[in-house]
Length: 223
Image (cartoon, rainbow, N blue to C red; front, top):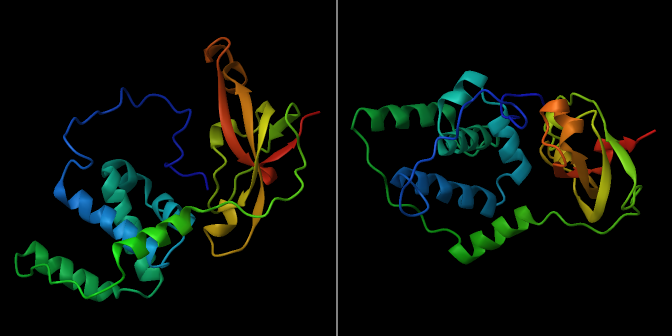
C-alpha cells in the first residue's frame, strides 16, 4: 500500500520534532492508549500487522495532523469496530458525553492478568516459523521487486527496483502482507545491503549503505 505512512527516503519535512519529557509518555492519556495496545493484542483481538495496516488506512491529512499515539488510538477504534468488539454508535455517544463533561471512566471488569496479557502480546510478536529452504544465500545479488501492493506490506517504497546484496539469511517468518489480512503465510527473510548511491544516486552518501530485512517474495534475481 503506497500511503503517506511510507515516509522512508522522503525529504522536505525539516528536522525531527523532539519533545523532551520525563518517563515513557508525554501525556497521561498516552499510557492509556498503550494499555489498550496491550489489551487488544494480549486478548488476541487483532494481529500486530492488522494494527499496522489500520494505521496505514488513515486519510493522509489525518495521519500527518495527529500525534504518534493518536494514530494508535485511531487504529484501535478501526480494529475494534471491524471486529464487532465495540458498537460505533455507542462509541460516538460515549465520546460526546466525555466531551460534554457528562461521563466518567467506569471501573473496568475483571479480566486477564497482566502476565496473561503480556504472554498474548509476546505471541503476537512471535513471527518465527519452521524454516523453509531459502531461495537466496549470503552474497547473492538481488533486486527488490518494483510493485505497488494494494494491501499491507513491509517492503519500503524507496527501495523498490533497487539492487543489493544478501548479507545474511534471517530465517522463516510470518509474511506481514498476509497476516495483516487474516491469511496464513510465511517466507524466508533476508538482510539485504543496498548502497546509498543505488537508492539516491549522487545524493547518496559515498560508501554508505542501508540494510533492510526483506521477505523472499519482495526479491528477484538481479541479472
